[in-house]
Image (cartoon, rainbow, N blue to C red; front, side, top):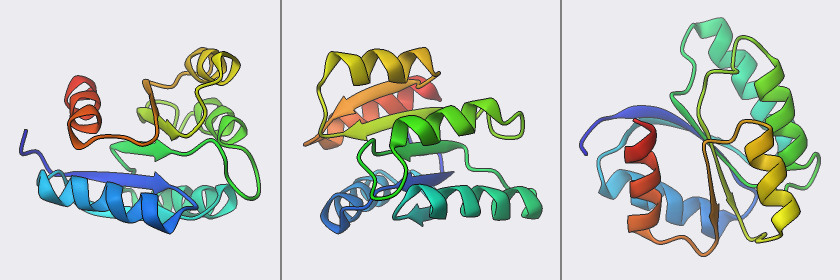
Length: 129
C-alpha cells in the first residue's frame, strides 16, 4: 500500500510515537502527521484541522493519556458530526476486555495492543482503506 494520508497520532510516549512515525514513513503512508501528546492537544488539533478544511483520514489513539482517557476522547470524536466518520485505531498497552469492548462499542475501527509490529499496524491501516 503506497497511499499517502493525513494521520493524527495521539500518543504521550515519545518512544511509541517515534516508532509509529517510523513505520508510517517506512511504508510511505502519511503525507502529513499531526502529533498530539494528550487529549486536549488532540481536540485542539482537530479543531484547527476543521478550520483549515483538512481533517485527518485516520486517528491512531492511545487509551492511557495524561489528561483525559483515550476512551473519553474517542467518545467525544464519535459524538461530533464533523469528526465521527474518521476511522480511529486504538493503540494501547491495555489488553483488558472492558477497554477492548468499550472501544469497539464507541466506534473504534480496530484495537491493537502494544508493542505493535510494523505488519500488524499496516494490516489494520490497509483494512480501513
